[in-house]
Length: 118
Image 1 (cartoon, rainbow, N blue to C red):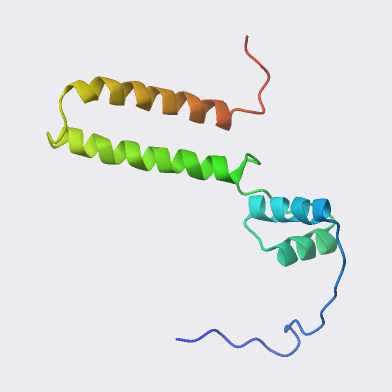
Image 2: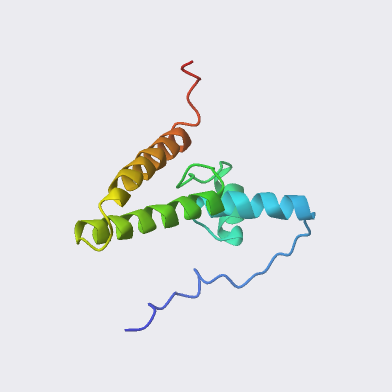
């Protein structure tokens, strides 16, 4: 099944070019990425609504988020192997320590906008 046809009135045929500094471009790309949009769609939404598009995820560094996701995947794989008896039982203690550390990191990152409790 192909892409649905767009009527001529809804087709985007006019192209507008703007020049940005490197810093401006980086900022637009960062905002767009946080919203899950392309840069063009983010700019279009900002222009026509006058508001910033809704951020789909916390504005924390995407590479940090992806790295934490990889750690979680690895932790799950190790857990599976430990439960299957493929690692010595001593590894279980270390694995539980790492799981607690990962939970603490995720908790700190997801509550980064709340005032300090200390």
